[in-house]
Structures are given as structure tokens and as C-alpha cells.
Amino acid sequence: MSAMLSIQGLWKSFAGFVATRDVSFELKAGETHAIIGPNGAGKTTFFNLITGHLKPDKGAVSFEGRTLIGMPPHKIVRLGIARSFQRINIYPRLSVFENVQVALIAHEGQQWNLLRVGRSLHRDATRDLLELVGLAAEASEIGGELSYGKQKQLELAIALASKPRLLLLDEPTAGMSPQETGETIALVRDIVKARGLTLLFTEHDMSVVFGMAERISVLHHGEIIASGEPDAVRNDPEVRRVYLGEQGHG
Amino acid sequence: MPRRSYLIASAVVVLLLALLPLAGSRHAVDLTTEVMIYALFALSLNVLVGYTGNVSFGHAAYFAIGGYTCAILLTTHGWPLVLAMPAAVLLAGLVAGVVGFFCVRLTQIYFAMLTLAFAMLVWGVAFKWKEVTGGDDGLTGVKLPAMLANHVNYFYFTLVSVAIAIAALWVICHSAFGLTLVAVRENNVRAGFIGVDTRRMRWAAFTVAGAFGGLAGALFGMYHRGMYIENAFWTESAQVLIMVLLGGLYSFVGPIIGAAVLHLLQVFTNQYTPYWPTVLGLILLVIVLVLPDGLVGLVNRFKGRGRRS
Image (cartoon, rainbow over all chains, first blue to last red; front, side, top):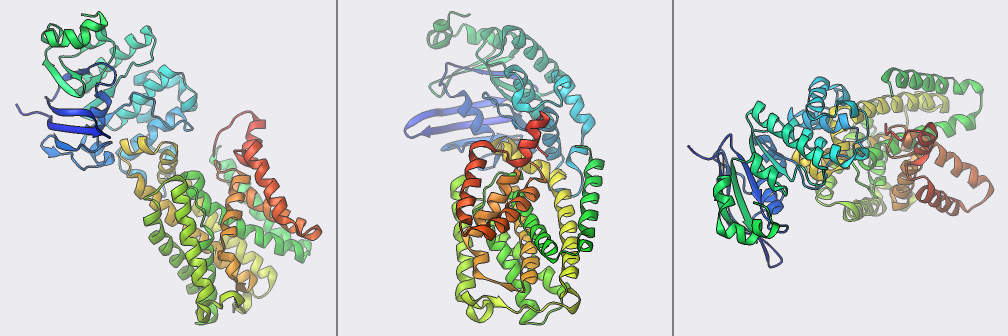
């Protein structure tokens, strides 16, 4: 079976610091795959390279056979790849409702419609998405005034509004309380299953990672040092040495 | 805000304005004509500044292009008004399209400086191209259709033109396009990741702003029967920006209120002292220090909820 996302020999450095070192990686359709690694291992850079936010120095990225190199983020989204961000990245002065509504407008290519009233579009679909992530009651609040955990939920709703086939979540539970983490993970798992999404995510919480991922890749100093099923990765001596051992998990 | 109450309020304002000439004060009619023109000018700029989040420091360029083009076509070439005005709007929009193409490659202070640079270029053309623009003598004696020569008739002509233009801007700003512009303003990066080509959106906003600014300029030139290089000078760009900030850039009506208050204050101040720039400086000080969301923001704060348009 050919891979949905295929990455070969990816390199990226910033002013001499190598953030991504010769990374090759494949993601099959329908897979739930976690990228783990210590802070500064290059996880976010890796996401930014896939989604067009950064241009790699070298290497190839292709999605369903089409190369993504040199493609701007807005075109990559249209191919079916949506993402959330580790640091909150919403429209702070728009209402929660509009935050999602705008994403639906863009998904339908209506951002060039000068005549139809923006707020009248996709009201039902917006409500459905907010309900899905548990923000129905906050619909009319200002996005930037939500609690941190709720802004993370909003991030997720915005990403889902682009109706992706591949969803990239960058630390979806960072900064959340244990209870919020549990709820968010259950939610993500349900959505991924219900919509048949392929999921690539980064996460700090190892219980989340090992409870959810079908495959795990470990990044260390910009390199993938191990990739495979959770048990294999857990028992990999190199991984234990540089990462899991240090943290006392496993 | 419910759309119906917006509509009723607008209808009442237009009706009251339509009754104004009956009061018999020539001064009031002239002053209101000017305020309406500046209101349109400020609103056009706010498509770019308030809705898209790009501070332009060169909006006078499009006002001047619209004003000069309409005046030149009417006077030098004897075009009828129904052709001269649309041509002026078209040219202002076209130039804004070309200038915007370069400006939207930059952001923030660099964007502002580039708009300023292009505006100075336009001023330079108006200054040097004497045979066409009259240079620093200005372009005087603009020929108007006989029907508009009377100041009351011109008031009504301005009222209708501005009302239609504002209605069009309202539709644009509240459309799917307008809402997406706000998303671009709020978070340029995020807007890219929902599939929006943010540079093209900003480019479109720049062009729309220029075209409507050109219409305001055309109305201005005909009203004054002349265009002068001062109309293209950077201080004009600053003044219209202050109008936007004074009224409030995060609301649709803000710039209209800002234009009215600032212009009336200017006329009033000039009756008593020659120190208008000083007064303007004080106004700017107050905006920056206590009115970041302008007068509309102040009203909203009293109403207890800071919601934009």
C-alpha cells in the first residue's frame, strides 16, 4: 500500500542550527501516528515543513502523490491537510462562532464573495462543529476571552472546518488540566474514528501517546531515531537512553 | 447589531440630511457636503486599515487621482459627468491595484512606508505635470453640468452618490469577503491555514479602498471646482487616517463619525486660531492615550460591551 504522506531526506536549519536532519517518514492512510521527542527536538519545525509554513532546505514531501514543496499553506490546506498549533492561534477579536464560520467560508472558496452576508453562511455547520468540540454554549463569546483549554478546543474546531483527510495536531493538550486532557483525547479519538481521518500528532504526555498512537516516531536533535509500533518504540534502547529513560516513563 | 435597525437608522439619517437645505443655511449645506465627502474618504481607507489591518499612509494618492482625473476629463476634455466620474473611480482603482500589488508584499511599518512613497510619487506627478494638472497653481475652473452648479443641487448629488457608495461598502464589509478580511487582520498566519490566500485578499482590499477613495476625490474636486497639489500631500493621508482612528477603526460607522467630528472641529478652530495643527496634535494624543478604539469604542465601553461592527 502506498503512503498518504511521504517524506524523504528532509533538512532544515536555522542560522547553522539543524532543526531537521535527513528525516524520512511515511504515513499510511487511516493511521494514527505520534511524533514524540524532548523539547527542541524539532517536532513543530517538522509540522511547519509539512504544512508549508517553512520551506525545507532539502528533501521531498508528497501528499497522495503530489509534491508539497514550494506550495503555500493555503494551497496545502485545500489538498486536505489541516493543522492545529501548539501555541494558541485563533482570531482573538472574532466570536467563537465566527472563528469557525470563517474557516468554513474559506473551505467553500467563498472568501471572494462580496455580496452574501458573511455571518449568514454555514450557520448550521458551524453550530455542529462547536457542539462537537463542546463549545456550543460559548458560541457568542469573544475567542480571545475563552479559557486556555477552550481556546485549544476552538483550534480543533477550526482545523476540522477545513474538512481534512489528514489532521496534524501539535500538542493538542499542552497546558490543559488532567481532566481537560482526558476529555480532549477522547474527543479527538472519536472524531478521527467517525470521520476516518489520518492523524499525525505531537504530545508530551506519554500516557496519551501510548494509549492512542498506532505508530510512534521519536525525534531527537532533528533526527528520527526510532519509528514503529508503541511496544517496539518503548523497548528501543536508544529511545530509552535519550528520552523515555530521562523522563522516568515507560 | 440587527440589520433592520441599521437600515432604519441609515434611512433616518439620509432623510434628515435631505431636509437640511430647507433650513436655509448655505453654510450648513456646504459644510455637510464636505463632511459627506470626507466620510466616504475615511470609510474607504477603513476597508484597508480597520478591516484588513494594514495601515496605509498614502491614501490621499487615490483621492487625488480620482479628483484630478474627474476634473481634467470634465474640463480639459469636455467629457460628460456620467463618463468622467466612473473613469475617475476606475483609474483610482487601477492605480491602487498596481501600487497594492507591491505594497502587500510587505507588512506593518514597511507596508506603511511604501504606501507613503507611492503617494509622494503621485504628488510629484501632480506637481510637475503642469500642462495637465496645473502644477502648484492647481487645476481651477472645473466645468460642471449646469444642473449641479447650484450648491443645493450639488449637495443632493453628493448625498445620493455618497449614500450609494456607503451602502456598497457596507455590503462589501459585511460579506463573506469582508468577514475573511477581518480574519486576515486578526491572524494572518491562521487565515493562511484555513485556505485563504492572504496576500491576494489584502491586495483586493487595497484596490477597493483606492477606488472608493477615488470617488470621494472626484466629488471633492467638483465641489471645490478645483484640485490642488495639497490634496495629494502626505498630510492629507495623515488627516484621513486620524479621522478613522478618531471614529474607531473596528466599527463600520466609526470613520463616518470621525470624519464629521474632525472636519467640523477644523472649520470651527480655524475661525478662532491659526493653530489647527496644534489642535490636531492634541486630538491625536487623546486618541492614542485614552481612545484606542475611537469614539465608537468609547460609546461601546459605556454600553458595557466592546464588540466591533
